[in-house]
Length: 116
Image 1 (cartoon, one colour):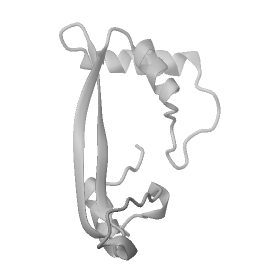
Image 2 (cartoon, one colour):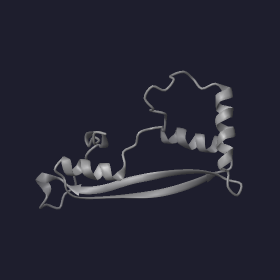
Image 3 (tube, helix red, strand yellow):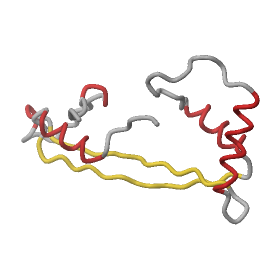
Image 4 (spheres, rainbow, N blue to C red):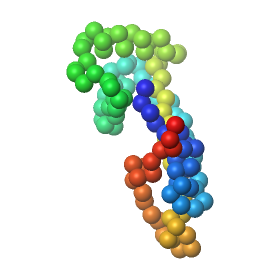
């Protein structure tokens, strides 16, 4: 399982980084597919890939791919396969621009995570 930060962790990280008045929100969405291949195609176009620490680095064999497709079929509802995701977004005031109407962008990898 990939370790994505919780939306609350993003807000907490902004506060620790001295950003002011953070507002974080999340949208949960579900797309549906007729076949697993359609989902996999969309994921590839998005650039999504497995970043799980310690995962095997070799190519996935045909048998493993078929097993995944078979397991995914158990989630089929009303003829469609669901794929759910969350989009976390927010904004906060940068310390040096707190009183100004400006926008500051910070790459997500600079925000960091709380220690578990």
